[in-house]
Image (cartoon, rainbow, N blue to C red; front, top):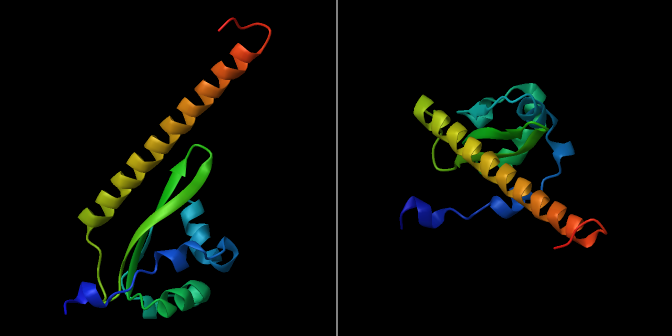
Amino acid sequence: MNGAQRISPQIEGLQQIPVELTPWWNSLLAHGEYINIPKVSDMQPEAYAEKAILEEQGIQSVLVIPITSDTGLFGFMGLDSVINERNWSKDEIQLLLVLAGIVINTITRQLGSQQEVMGQRDFCASDHGHC
């Protein structure tokens, strides 16, 4: 059995964590900073809540990139390692930063298109439009 077969997905549990439980993490992300933790067990004291959550999931190392738009923090994406501790390379960090940019650009374009369609619909539904 290889390592991937022994790892159970934790995404469902991690997505349900209220932001109030991760103040240190959210503060960094809200300021546009990425989080690079090669060794969860060595996290600083002010990150005690985040450390407890990560250790509970068996996460050894984590890299988290903010997804931001003009209006602020939209979300984040990340990588974690549960088998071994890991030092994320500059290339891996840069790749995730580029991917976060692609994600927010796609979301922004989609939201803009939806707003345009809704505006056209509202115009057509008004007395002014003849659609």
